[in-house]
Amino acid sequence: MPWNLTADTPIYLQLVERMKSDIVAGIYAPGQKIPPVRELASLAGVNPNTMQRALSELEREGLLYSERTSGRFVSEDPARIREAKASQARELTAGYLDKMRSLGLDPQSVIRMITEQTMPAPSDGQGRN
Figure 1 (tube, one colour):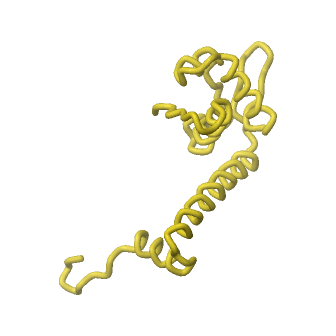
Figure 2: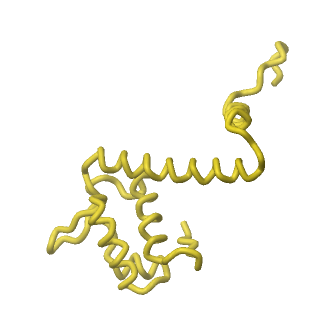
């Protein structure tokens, strides 16, 4: 998947968010070794120092850990990964709700719209929907 970096947010923060997304989505499984800094930097099209900064931040947050001679690995702590997933979900939800409010929609309207999008249409009784 392309990295799609933009100019509106610091690059290293975008790298952190992308790597978090890959971890919580299971692209990088718990305990899995991640590619080396230079390889990730090349894939993202960024300076290796920028990628190093992002990976260091993920280590600080506990989503990655280093083994001196073996490289970096994804945390095997399921609680940490669940919290990262919940945090990303909260951020996405807040952004979505802000956009809906800017359209003038109240929370009940948003809930109704979500329900309509996720529930199958009722059958007409003749096997057709």
